[in-house]
Length: 211
Ligand code: 1PZ
Image (tube, rainbow, N blue to C red; front, top):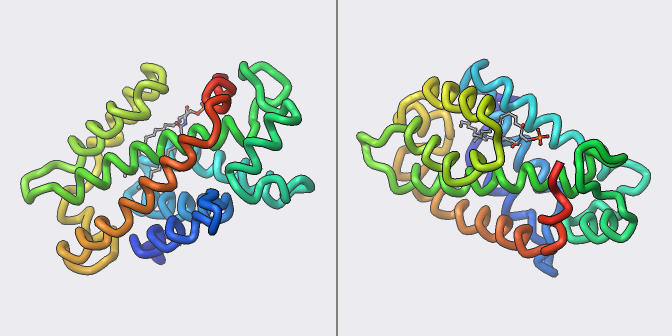
């Protein structure tokens, strides 16, 4: 669906993400990520290893949501409660639940922090700003601290293949540069709110993630 990508779709999903109780609906969280992945795919095959990992994690969450215990996976809040109450979260990767919803969500949650930092620097960038620098600065301030050396190197190389700022704005498919900047200004508070609410969900969740 690379050709149907637009920044507006990302914004719409994150807008729908929070319900009346300020809970994060997994369905829209997943759709938002799917949009972002389709955007990344349109940037070229050098990002395939990133997109593969993201798709894999999105799929794990989707399988929970559509699976037999799906009612517990409607929101991030209900998912965390369900998995913790039922001891479905492992402290180590070698445990019996290596792909819990909590663990998987945490990976995407950290990536959302990267996205937030990157889009904010894109929004406030000037003509001579470099997308590769913005991307890697955001990465170093977020995801990098959770990735081993090899992944950091591969990711750094992929960033060098990013298109320049002008092309990047075009691929975002939201009109003129000014319009993109305006839309980013609308999308960012929504993304930040979803990030923050997820972050606040459960102090136990962070402890329960490693592995
Ligand atoms: C626009 C350019 C795209 C830049 C993307 C920046 C994010 C770099 C993420 C690099 C991930 C490298 C591949 C595999 C990583 C996994 O080891 C980790 C940990 O998972 P585990 O091994 O513990 O199961 N996976 C992640 O950290 C999740 C990464 C999700 C990346 C989503 C990026 C979406 C980009 C949207 C573009 C607008």
